[in-house]
Length: 142
Image 1 (tube, rainbow, N blue to C red):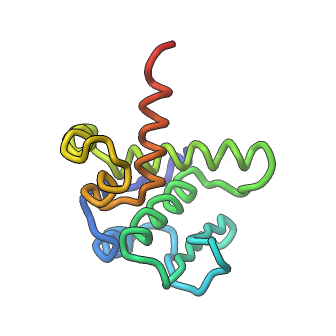
Image 2 (image 1 turned 30 degrees about the horizontal axis):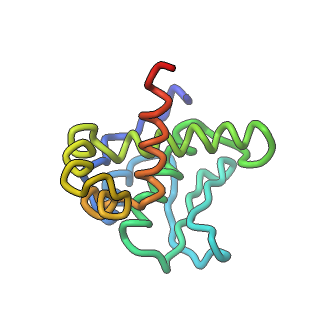
């Protein structure tokens, strides 16, 4: 992790509140029309995050956190073996930063383990819930 970069706790904020909370950071966030299935992009050389403007606010919130984690670590690639490692780390860290263990456990019980309903309860995407579950699975000793 880059020593000079610090990310505040954004876990309880909406997308708009997150945008306001990061105004002082050394990264610019802009909305754009991105190619299909590209939700966001981070360019380390420009310290620029692009978020696709056509998404729901929940998906924008999750995408912004994901791209902010790339910024936090100063990631310069998303391709090849190293890029795949960065992407896995970023997905798991995004899930950890957006989901509280207590809130997840409560939602898991309330919604009988259904990922889509849990995601709605926690204001995250179903992919974030699945990444969180993957993180929990990795933490359980074999």
